[in-house]
Image 1 (tube, rainbow, N blue to C red):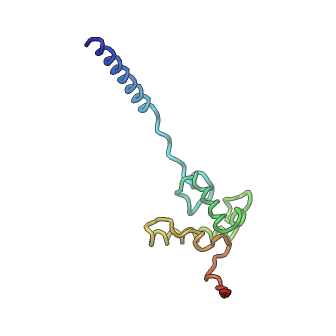
Image 2: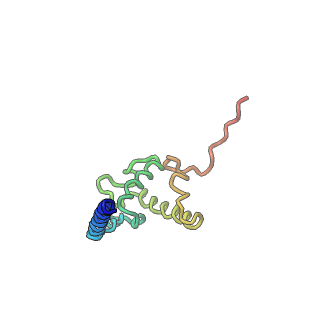
Image 3: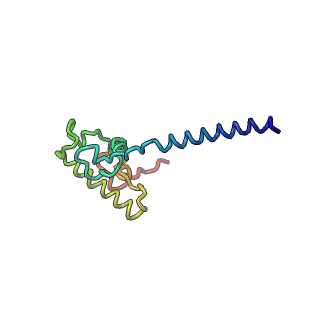
Length: 136
């Protein structure tokens, strides 16, 4: 019986040491600081200010795809914080409008986006395209 007990005790001690070492390491690590918001990381963010800063550029890329434009459609090249372009002011209003629709109607799920109306065009379509007569 003694031959079996010693290896079991050694294994138990080893597991205890590993557990204590892991616990000490876990408690000694400082919590990481909270991620910066877009407003904290960038200048003149007014509508998307509470989103994580790391999400701002991917969101902007979605806007460019949804409207079929490049960044300088809304932004002054080299001075992205300026409000010199009318399109930037309109974009802010449209973002707020889509957010309000999603909040009021879809429990804050992003069902309505820029793509919903724009479909890759600067100007949204207000009616479906004319139907073409079927060929026989």
